[in-house]
Length: 196
Image (cartoon, rainbow, N blue to C red; front, side):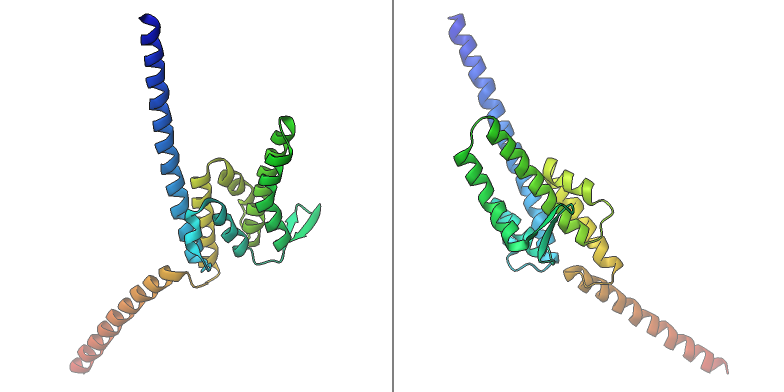
């Protein structure tokens, strides 16, 4: 009887942790997808809803890179389309062809490859934190994507680029302030005219 009780309690603990980490993983995925969606929307990417589809989300990262080549730290360069094909095919080839240590090496190479793609994107935006944000985008994905979004927003704001919906809000506020300033100026002019 003690054996069955211990098996039941271990099973309950395993089920609890499986559900807990499943819900936590879903929560983290949703946060990452929302920040990705906001980034793609700000960059006016053709299909921002790809942010909610795991593999297609990275397609939009490639779309945001304006240069036609991916620079691998001055070692070599790849055409952007070739780099994109390699990115999408590499995981399938490595899992089909390799096992054991070779599969682990292929996984490490894939992570490095992902880092290089993020780094190229941030480097194109002249980010002083390109290396840090690229690492965070891989290790703590929602935080990294948020920092990339924030970095792009600051870059566009500093270069006076239109920032989607944020620009509209900003110009509406400015036009309200300008209208109020015009009213104050016309009132001051009428007061000055009355005094003369």
